[in-house]
Figure (cartoon, rainbow, N blue to C red):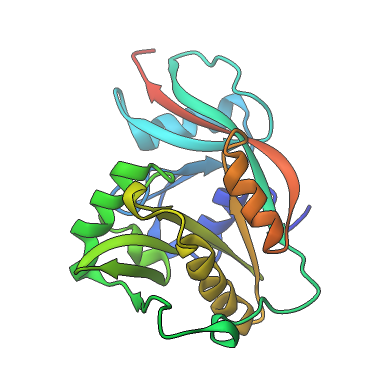
Length: 234
């Protein structure tokens, strides 16, 4: 197996086990942290184990290796093809400071006090699931303009040797300044400084973001399928 195979399950059984809720063959993040979950294998037993975690009417987000196939008692809410990309650049990403100027924005490390602004920005830009305790999964960085958070990026899933770059987003009124690139490079530098490899997930139809990630040294590893499921009555 590749270290990134079944990455949510692997994160919740290794580096991020402290955030896990468990039932038989399934794991999910504490809901306030993330709506994502996974199972050891996408079998009947796997989905039955998810049911024990979610309960009737509950929802969960999965990363599947193949398009979702209908399962008894579950309904498909939303989803999309989602390439998984990993950094394979020959060198550490170039530091922002090597080309900095007095006009470069200040990068700030975000904390619990910034959660309202982070929630507002991610709700507007929809970079992926972001809950009120998601920031606890890793370092999140931001750029402010006139005191308002206008761009951010950070770390989400962590497995041995790899850390995911996530929640990369910019307020639509502040695009065109390279904020996403600036923040991603800083997040990547911090991951690389720990001897880890950055990786990420992106919707397949987000061509602009994919092109940016490729310029930063990311390559597609595999096509996954994001699926949000709701548990109904059996």
